[in-house]
Length: 113
Image 1 (cartoon, rainbow, N blue to C red):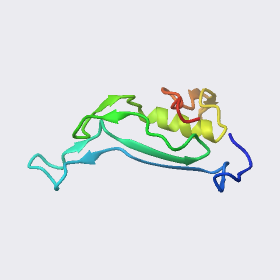
Image 2: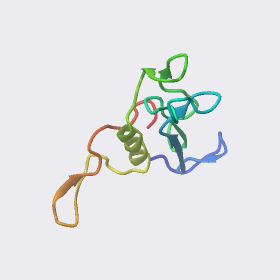
Image 3: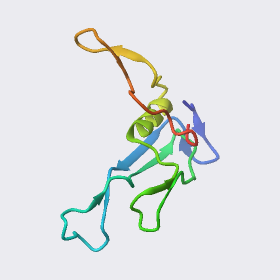
Image 4: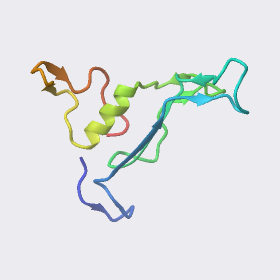
């Protein structure tokens, strides 16, 4: 994790700001088939304690499906863990003492941390 104050960008480099959406919908409202979500074309926004100022991945012309650099939700969570200094590969015990991986699948998005 980065530390200290980044005077060039006037921001605190230890702060992570993250937001995401799991689905987008048809432009112009609901379709006849219901809510018409496209869960394959989600997005996440990051600022602060990651490399910023870039777009990673691309969707098709209708923003329905990824055509390059598709990432899963575990990859987004792995990026958050990594930026916060948490080892996303670690194993923890549940309440019954059984080992569980902190993150079952995925790893940080390579362009960000």
